[in-house]
Length: 185
Length: 93
Picture 1 (tube, rainbow over the protein chains, first blue to last red):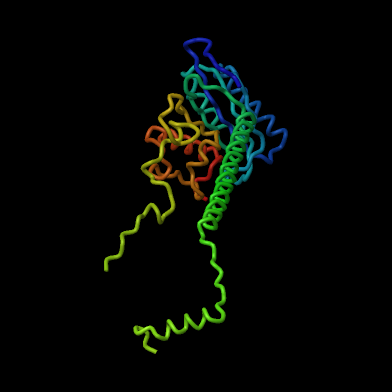
Picture 2 (picture 1 turned 180 degrees about the vertical axis):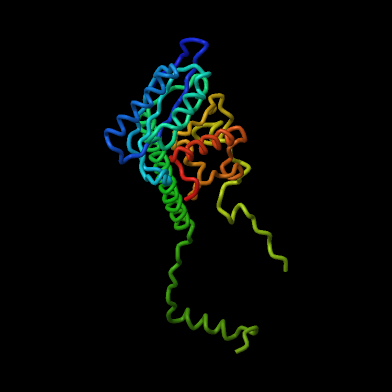
């Protein structure tokens, strides 16, 4: 991480992203990098930080290439030289794409590797938190269900066992039933 | 007999789009009051920051669904367009 503070009022920070194809001769690559450096020197740009991303897959084919090499330069330079630099980078041989961005004030320069590491860490923590929440919810559901079932068992009335009638009591009960006038047999 | 009117929110099983908060104004939860430490710049190199706001086909999600405020939606649009130009993101999958 680099905290940039401008050295004078005439210069400011620029972020220059450069993309060149991945399967490239070492000789050609060295030549290209030399050319980029020469352009920067000509514009009087001072390098603050250089972030080499290396080989990366492209989201779509550019100039017939599926993969490319990314380099992000953080340069301090005079804004009046920007147009020349942009034009020179555009016509440089072997370059696929380039882009110049003005970062906002108090921009903290971080390398891609650091940023990715941080993002992965936060992503992992977030995932862990979510899975923990899910497990807690499941546990709560199980506990609630168990509580409900125990309550239902407790409230249920105990069954009264019917005792079989025998002898005189049975005959008396039968007579009572037969003599009932409301009963139409 | 008139059939009872169905509640859309219940049936579609999704959060009410009006109740969402801008993720860039309130980093982390996406809920709660606006944070003074809100995002001032969305970096086109930061794929992790842009990813939740891009759908499968590579389109930027509408504010109505993502809940992003207009200010941050414009920042997001610029960042995504820059990333697309540099081949980091697809224009169309």
